Image (cartoon, rainbow, N blue to C red; front, side, top):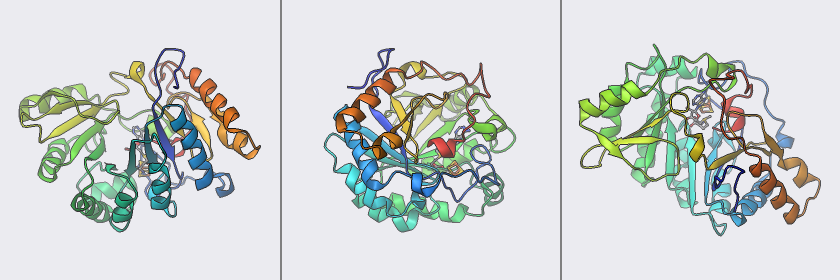
Length: 323
Ligand code: SAM
Ligand code: SF4
């Protein structure tokens, strides 16, 4: 089992399969970003599978494929099939912007991905283009409808709420998610990279209380292993989650680490502590040495982020770490 020095068990790996993206969400990635990892430094599928086997052996049960935009990595369904077949991996999920979801959804579902998180901050095409710097809302909505028809469940919509950008659209997003049976999750912007620092932070607590009374919602629990706190309707058919890393952090229950596409294991999103897994793999480490490095790195997992105390600390962008 993987435990850190504060007694938290790590059982969830966020696995970035690319640092490229076809969108440029203002809070995530600079529009003119050029600092991509060399493709030679990307972990191969064989290397990823080896690392995930090592994690599974140490008690990790959940994997989320992420990026960058994971659907830009060739044959992602092939990788998903390999990972979902690893003994011990009970839950394989995907975070995507959904621009390429419609054509990939069937293969991904067959490969063992059942749960999806889709980023969607607005339902307004012009606003979507302003936030993401691309005109792709129609493809995203099409991807969502195809995925829903195929039977992905649950589908969670991640909405980053930004002051003066989309905070007037919350009720419209609630209505959209109610209509289609999606779980809505609102996210506070985090100062990850300079893009995150300039994103127009909005505290979610007042929004939560307004929605509670407007829609008659009550506190609820939704499975998934993440840090969101939920409100649900009385018949539980509608669920809305609030991810509040800034106003009410959840570090004391953190159960996750992140592996970036170049094989760097980050043990906290808001700190720079890391293990250079790729370098070990390519130096020919044994399985025992790999496991020892993971155990030791996770033992040193920092207690908490310092987004408030030291907002300039993390210079890497969310797309590079794997969100
Ligand atoms: N491209 C995929 C997507 O957008 O879902 C996966 C990667 S993306 C980095 C993962 C999540 O990180 C998205 O839900 C996105 O909204 C969130 N994110 C990116 N930058 C953020 C920031 N500065 N603060 C809060 N959330 C952020
Ligand atoms: Fe791309 Fe996702 Fe970042 Fe948007 S949030 S730029 S879709 S990686």
